Image (cartoon, rainbow over all chains, first blue to last red; front, side):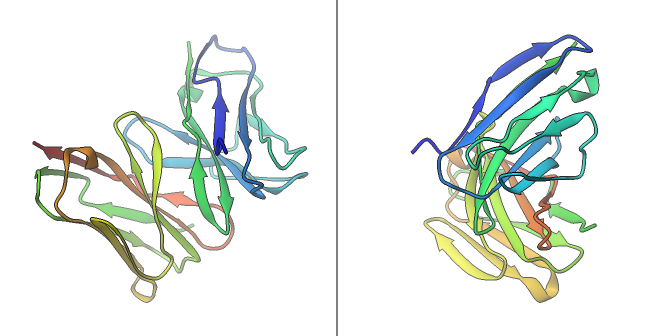
Length: 110
Length: 108
């Protein structure tokens, strides 16, 4: 049981490039979410999903897309990276509202 | 939306000391969790506690939902307790709101 996994661990992008952050969980949780954490701050919700085929926006959704085709996977897409998207990204999944977090992806946009 | 405030923002303790961290929230909540973010950035679940009291070893937590606050108690602190402690709340919309955290440093 690997829990919540995220890839890659680190990524450097140039402004305007696109990429997908991967998130997978093997706990059969219906709820999954993406957060970003900026230095000295708490986590802010980007997007979330309450089940396959259902997604919704969180607090800071602009510049990010998500889809949920399976229960296990919840990828986060940056279509045109901007320096303001430099952050640490965490994926989480939930069972009965208790969240479990992945190890994070540190993204730098130059 | 719900506002979450944590206090104190920073705390320095000598090993063996006890501490209380506080989380205030501005509206009623369905879900509340405490997390520890260790110095390597990993987020560790401490408690899922929308109401009542729970204990796990040297840590315990109490949430008084009617008065909109939660407390995290750390007893006999150890250097491994260092890191940032976050409170996160949800009003039932699946949109968790995090506080800005309490940064704890435990000195040997």
